[in-house]
Amino acid sequence: MIKTIWELIRNLINKPITVRFPKQQIEIPEGFRGEHKYELDKCISCGLCSRVCPNRAIEMVEAPQKHKEKYPKKYPRIDLGKCCFCGFCEDICPTDALKLTKNVYLSTFDIKNVIKEPFEDDVD
Amino acid sequence: MNEKSPTTYELLFGPAHPGSGNFSVKLRVSGEQVVSARSDPGYLHRGFEKLMEYRDRMQNSILSDRVCVLEALNWNLVHAEAVDELTGEEIPDKARYIRVLMAELSRIQSHLIWYGALSMGLGFDTGFKVAFGYRDYLLDIFELVTGGRVYPAGYICPGGVRRDLPDSAKTKIEKTLDKMKIMLRKCENFEKTTLYPRTRGVGVLERQDALRLGATGPIARASGLYSDVRVDDPYEIYSELDFEIPTRDEGDAYARCLLGRLEMRESMRIIRQVLERMPEEKLDPVKPKIAHKIPEGEVYVRNEIARGEAGIYMKSIGEETPYRCKIRGPSLLHMIPVLEHLLAGCQIADVPAIYWSLNICPADMDR
Image (cartoon, rainbow over the protein chains, first blue to last red):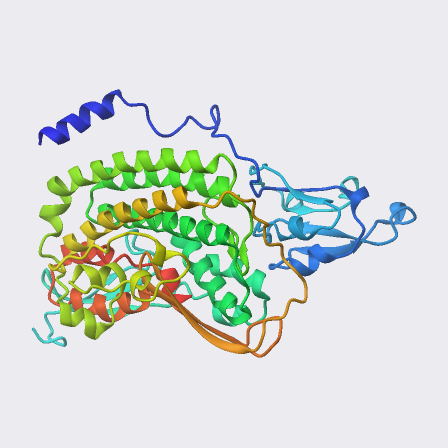
């Protein structure tokens, strides 16, 4: 009983283990597997990311008509709804064109935000 | 009381009950007493065994996370060992140490969920909050080492591990272990005042019944059976480590709960030894490969995970994907024969106490 009361007093003095989100946030460490960052100019269109993806979330698509001259090959379109954030695409990419960032705030009401097109400006 | 007597009625415990997980038990009840119980599984079937036949070894290590969400790293290790045994690949020393380190951290984390769920089942919310609050410190370590809090994404994979241990990990783990010590002290205080009077003598599993019904892990050890794969059939570096296997003779819900706490203490001892002996050299992380064939053969690997004995039988015919992969989860025998045996004859109010004291996971049973 005395131990329990002692524990109660100790808990009154101690700070809570939670933080006041979103004003306060726990720092996310390096190497976290969050949203993808894709650099189009580094990509060599090898298609390894699409082949290694366990959920088949990456599809190789052709560039839109106006970019076709500069980018004649196929480029990865990532469906974040299917992605399990394993990071295999990042590991296998020979040119580091695809990387996972620390961004975890991916909730959205708009389904278009779920699919990451290789040519961002062409998403209508 | 006859099972078909007109004074009995059926009571459903789950699958939408907040304290049962994705699992249901159909209870035949007479007044306040349970006459018989029938487990009703299958609400979480995802077909991993079939899915694994269509994926290569690295993709399967991602699937092995999902077999049991509560101890993903332990299942990673079982899968990785099965493939390693087929390929005969040499695992670097440091990778072996990291594997055991992560598996033991995962065991503590899983026992904390057990502790929390049991407290919640008994209506003791403080225990639940304390256990889940401290579990978050362990998830912080997983986040730092594997890159994800709950799903390590096949961190322990065939051939080693996917990343080397970060420099800050060692100090962080040591600090967390100190916090865990405080938590264990808190648990000890709860046990005497709340868990002990509520779980003592409830759901007694006799030694011969534990043997007959196929109980493994902490459930068997709480009934006086000394069995642990880490000692009986050592894998990785367990044979080099010094640790004890706690056992109890009572076989009731309290003994199982107490065993959970004692096992956390032993796991902390193992982690400290592993950290001390961890080789200094840099480790080459394992990267996924395309068209990587598994040599022909068949293998059965078993490991001691938090819930009991986990096994994977794998057969390969020389292709990239396994020909057959059979998963043996410890919860299957605990949730069907053992649970049905213990629930028959108990009071309705004791059902959550017995249910959660078995440390069950519907995910690894349904697979």
